Length: 346
Image (cartoon, rainbow, N blue to C red; front, side, top):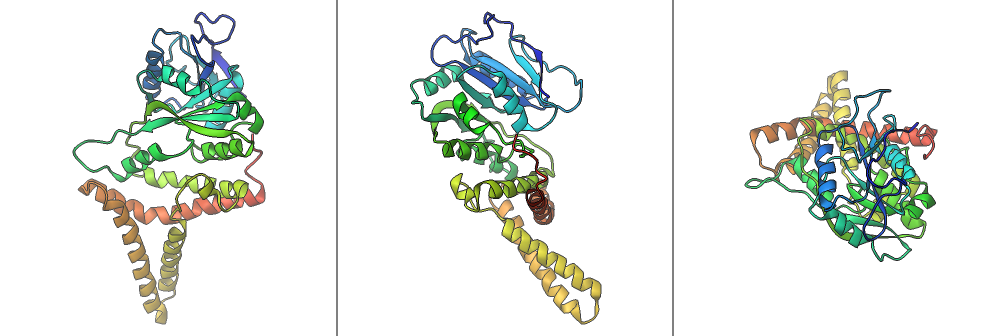
């Protein structure tokens, strides 16, 4: 259940956000309490100029009954969504808004100077058939060296279509589709799924001129392994949108087939080695095949990067673990889809 914690205290006493010109907009930011939220809120507030900017609604998706209150400015409304994931948090946000447009921001992005004015310009005069407008995303990379594998993955967001790092939707488009599909548990594919359904509902999606920056961050040594949970969401995308869903969102073929081959020959090598006897040669051959596939994957990730000892060690270790973990998550997703255990859409 969604509960409201604080309410806007600015001059909009009627509950309607005050906007000098252009369409009325609510900014919805789901969060799990990351420290980066402060920079996001400060950037939105400073970009509104005179302070009469859009209503800002933060959806606190931390689990638990009574987490510590989020440190947000007085004019920001806060809802709780109970730790049900970003799709559910965004749904709680747009359904609590009353404006004709809702713009979704992630809690780790920094809207650029003049973002509110640029947002207003992006949305003004859009025809009724346009259901969404995406901001331009910039990922600043470190100067003086090549980016790491993790930094390159984040940089890929700059070319992605219809991601909710900065994505405005017309309320009628959200109502026509029911919003985000809450069967997507994490911040992966839920935005692409919504974009496809908005287009299927007859709305067009366009790209605006406003600029938002997405800083890179260090999520830890094993972050690339944790990201493999998204393979379960890929299973749901295939179930909902068919086998050509990647092409529909402008995506690129993944490595899952290679991961499956690598995992298969690795398991074969272990199985044959355990039986002993004459099968040892076959086990050795399978082991060499596994080593070659793993080395190719690791080098594909090491070659473009800084090639520091730390990066090489990280790529070598995670390249061993990623293939079986990716396959396990995809199998988990397929089982949930086929047994109906993904639950209802929202």
